Length: 354
Picture 1 (cartoon, rainbow, N blue to C red):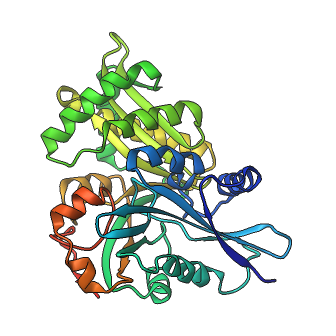
Picture 2 (picture 1 turned 180 degrees about the vertical axis):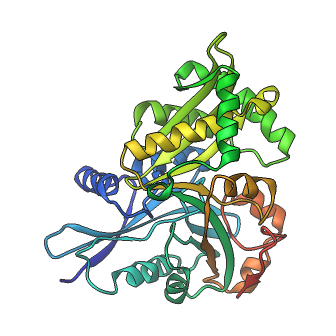
């Protein structure tokens, strides 16, 4: 069997888009996350001001046997490419079970070739994928090794004692979980802004919250938004946004009201979400990356029994390192928002190797 790899811009031909969406919805590969769903990719385009592009491999019978999505934007220093479905830590390189040998590496090489003349091209390696094999095909000029945390739901029989105590506290406080509705948006924004300010973390655009709520209402098999509230008075104590592939659910945005944190709304939401994922036949609950080893967020995830996995940000400079280094940090932030153009500052305390 042979395979032809073609590069497609938006909009995809309707029949091809339908086949690709079906493939992504049906595949059991844990690397396929909710971020890779076409509906999620399309929702991000007006927020990012860029365009999604698609490397699609087809076999002799025209069946789709491989897929690598990425995004591209024009900036003051030229094009930048990023194989990352915003906002999430993992890209996608998918091959089916009947794909020809070597297709995985060919997709990586074709992505690198699509960046000819660009100032930078970045590839975030897929969830649970072998980083070194991908790096060998991509040949990065810079490599930033990162970590993620996840739960194998098939191996989880009971939560650790601390988590069970948190859940008991949430229930004793009268908290319960429900699906979000459109009218929740204003309160979501209030809780999110207050929580981000208290934690000193960078903000996602409010348009992202708006788009993800609409996606959850329109495509509940891709995105899910749940609310913890007090049954007695309907007061919102927290919320959780997750996105789903066929085997993996990703923990995207957990927020607790500042005055409700001691009542543990987020653990209640996590427990409900993990139970939902298991009932839907999903295998992995992807808790994603933290800023650094042993920070409070990392420890919170570890106390659920999370396993630590590896991924990496691989970056190449088709016009040479000097061209990328000539761009000031402020210009990168302004001209390429949410793109990884080149490493600067401290990235989770992780050394950068070229």
